[in-house]
Image: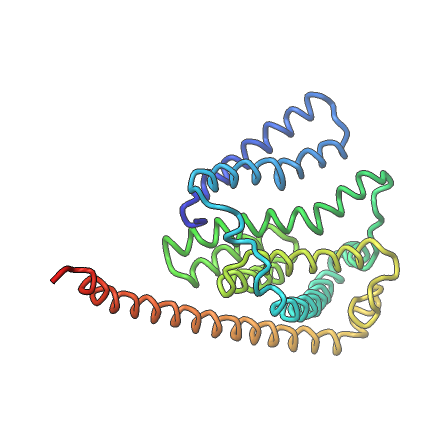
Length: 289
């Protein structure tokens, strides 16, 4: 299904639609908030909905084939654990980045340690949170774990698809390393379950917790995040330990998911082999004497 959807058409359509929309907004002298709203709607709503609606209709298939509730419950604890692990790794990486930046760009460290207030406009704030926590994760999982991952796998190998799609996903985020590993985990979750709802849940829950910690003053736990620039060096030992341990745990999680995926693929190959072996016998039974 996804492997038959051309990724170049999707990204070309996105680039064209975003460019035209932004030019139109500038011509109309729209406000910065209006430009941002249009940009997000085109990127996460209009283009993905049109693209996937067209190809689902063309293939005569349904979104229910990749989004379903069956078997989801057993993956909820796994997703919750991965979100906690992802936050610990991200906090460790954030400390590492601040450790490097503090001597050369202390103002960036002050920015990282401060809370970001929600926009004053209530409707715009609700729209922003909806994009970050729900709409964005759905669109990004369809794009990166649906089309991009499956297309690359179809043209190369499974691990090439996981690596390349996750690398592109990481390069489009501020925390490149953390987003890359997040992409690897999301890819393996989708390949393991065949249910895009699992990585969507992972992505949405991760962004929801991140938004709460980002926008709500005092919501960041003191033990997880650097509160001020003085802690970058004074708390180096605990944060370095957390970074190393969480990185090791992330690799273990990737290894565990990959083992489960390999078992699933072996079982599918064995089932296909049995079906091909039994097919001649069925044909013989159908043939008249």
